[in-house]
Amino acid sequence: MGDIENWQYSQKLVTADQAVQCVKSGDYVHYSEFILFPETLDAALSRRRVELEDVNIRSVCFTRVPQVVKVDPERKHFILEDYHFSAVSRRMHDQNLCNYIPITYHMGPRMIKKYVNVDVLFLVTGPMDPRGFFNFGIANSVAAAVLSKAKKIIVEVNRNVPTCLGGNQESIHISRVDCIVEGNNPPLMEMPPPAAPAETDKLIAQHVMKEIEDGCCLQFGIGGLPNVVGSMIAESDLKDLGIHTEMLVDSCVDLYNARKITCARKNIDTYKMAYTFAMGTNKLYAFLHNNPVCASYPVNYINDPRIIALNDKMIAINNAIEVDLYGQVCSESVGYNQKSGTGGQLDFIFGAFRSKGGKGLICLSSTITDKNGNLQSRINPNITPGSIVTVPRSLVHYVITEYGTAQLKGKSTWQRAEALINIAHPKFRDDLIKEADKMKIWIKSNKIPQ
Image (cartoon, rainbow, N blue to C red; front, side, top):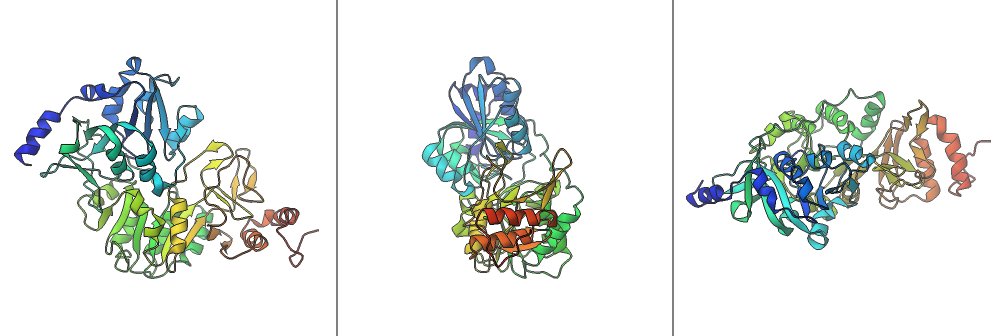
């Protein structure tokens, strides 16, 4: 690195305890996102608990319980909020320790720039490069937007963070940084291996495979189903697939190594796997390091439906909690119980439909077994009261269960009800028809059970 950058580094290098002295009562502090949790700075801030009140801490998807929460279970000093719930955030929410911030993900950066104060940013990066830049690593997302608003920028260096090439806005120069803290270099958290796929997942994946052809551009959502689909693609004759996805996962590495992914037929970011964050195992993190095949972008690029639509034959594969007979999709709550966030599902369902030959797929098993051992349908007359509609009926394209595929575009309410009942579990179909009739979304030419 140059002499000027070396000098700046030595001048800005401080301990974590010194760095967090800039945080004041009432401040808004943004934590680095997903896997890149600011472990050292969080611990230092927690040690200032008795000095501070009403410090608002935000992030996108907490992957561990912060020390500031552990030392302040009554939330007198620190208030935690999350733009996208993980299992960790969900558990904290159930204990009244964390709140959700509703967003449509691609609008996150614009929303932050227009409406959100950021007093201090804790940003986890890899080591500074010879030109004085700190790379955001595996979490680009809303980082650039937060940087544009932050009054103080504190970098926590973790030498295990891979250098993830852009794209754009994937790094920050030392001249913009206020403090540098050399962290404890914890290994990056790895996602647990997926459970063995259920038979229903395999059946759903088989229906998904029917919608994919050579040259398609793929987006994988979170969950076990993308892994099953990935395995089936690897064993198929498909070729020249592309990747434009919010979340890059291990199966993308496997498909690239199997020469299924070339990105050669993409209209934008040709020959590049474009993404905004990555979560997986060390196999994925090693693959990303200085790899020009991958391009890291902010989420307002990756998830913008207008950008998504520029690639032909965009296939968006996403999970859901339940779907009602109107076609409304809930993917983030069970009643009032927040389970996840809107994330990029709405973005990609909308964008895939606008893509030439594109398809937005909502995939779910037809049933779930509740805690009492009772089988419950996931296709219901109405969304469970209190549940959140993630994708409105006007935007839903395809719904897939183990019993088949329902294409809802252009269909009336009774046609939608019929299509969805046809892919519901047979045990519940007659009852669903009766309810559809009561709701006046059934017509006499269809069979109504006696």
